[in-house]
Image (cartoon, rainbow, N blue to C red; front, side, top):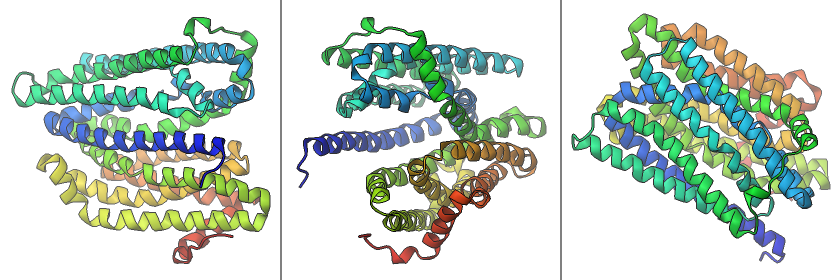
Length: 447
């Protein structure tokens, strides 16, 4: 039984987050399937190329201050208005830079008018990001329920809008190409709904955004603390989005723009499916994280034992999900997306291998956090990006999307495993990961 009020609040908050993640997974997968079938691989690739291009700059919208803001709101609740106001101002500056860089980049690359419009609209959605500080206020209060309710309302609105567009396309009332701009505007509408919802729940909690204040000293404090996380976030977003951009850019001169967008569409379908499975190790890691942290305070032996068990569990989850997926990928893709996206089945089979690195990397985050190896994490992310881009340049021209997937797998192997050999503090963790892989069946409950 959970006896303390604090424990009950944490459990209630985590439960809300878990429910939101499951509902989002189901609805995003549903709308993703229907939108892909309605648009076809070329137009779906065009939309995802625009999203991927803007995604290269997504870290600027957060400016790396989210976790720091939550921490400081917990430590200094009396400075709430200054913290929220200054954080919102910093995020606004980052969002403006994001829009300018995304639009300028699209113009410098000589993209056509439609693609520039898609990128500009999707980027402008990030201008709503400053009011997202309200979510972090509720996270600091361990009251995620209110913020999750807003996010679920936004998700419902987005789902209904996309379903309406799909219906218009299927009934012949709208051409698929004309729906692209409207799909981009849905991103903006999502931001508006979130902003209105956040301000309403913040008002109900007794606050008002007009009371927020901007402090130069607070801005200096937040930026000084957040710059490593900003760079880390940029590295992660680039590694996550660069493949879609590079596939199109590098294949256009070889096979033509239409075929290049079709390749992006096939890749994006496989990527969406594999990302849908990514929440499982994250939920497991977050569930086990408190036990790992407490074990470190008790003894090193108990701490390493729990880390080892976590790696065993992560590898077992990989086997459970990846083996069926490898063999059933093509039938699943055809069933959900139709024969037009059958080539994505082969990509999804190869993506199943990536789940190994995703699971182990997620488990490794517990070690990184408990050892405070954030600069090491920044270093590995940077190396991963450089490797991913470099290998993409070599493999995409000949292997297309398959080359991009192998580039990701190789870069993950180096950043998650190989780099641990270089530093004494991380070699023990490498030993635990390898031991967990080769003894995954020995999972036991640590004392």
